[in-house]
Length: 378
Image (cartoon, one colour):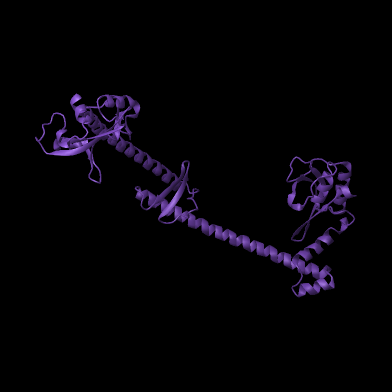
């Protein structure tokens, strides 16, 4: 220890004078190696007392014989260092752990201490890598078993599908699992099982596309049939009940369908022509309502009005009588009492206003006609 200290405190030591303990200089081929370590504050004080530089990072050059090169590491630049970093140590149940830091001493170490540290690192490093390889092998085995279970479950359940984005192909697909999506491709280690999953996932995906295309075609055909039925009904109704001007425009293909539907609705709801229609002027109603509480209420527009609609759960005698009058006038209609809750979007704490209307629905040929009436305006 003292001999090592004396060498360490020399300002310009000759590398050839510092040799590994127990080795005679010149007895074998030697390699010049650097040894770097740290001194704690106590160690730095000891270094200064012994005539050293007292620096935290200490580096010295050693001569290591070829028989002990297992204690030396050489980087890509050809720099040889004693194996002092990274350090390895036993940590109870965790086994061997790696610490990416230089060893720290409370006193300048001797050569024996440095070589013992390097020997311990060398021994534990091998155990560390063996444990890591074993853990990696176990992890890969567990992953492979899990992939096998997931793949087999997918193949056995015809209702399962691979993720649609990205679309499954014959070379790649993703399955959804409890731990996220799992990739299967032709380059997987479980290639045989992966190919089965890929083929089946791609087949199911293509089958779903064909079925969806057929459903869309049928839905489109049904929509076109309904549209044709409505066009024919409008043509017959305009021919029978339209004005001469409407018949001329319809014959020329210039009569808007919405105008024709409005005309049909006017005829369907003719028995209710004495009933006041519900006006969708909620912002004006809410403006009037808010000014009952404050004259400084802001000017409302449709953009800052929120309307929540629902079926009313109770009716006043006047509202009930209004509904019954409509039911007697249109026995085949569906009559609902509706609530419209109007609120100011910019100030949810402002007093809300609830407006009542009566929604009347009538089936007229292929059309389901709707109109709202105002029971409060009578």
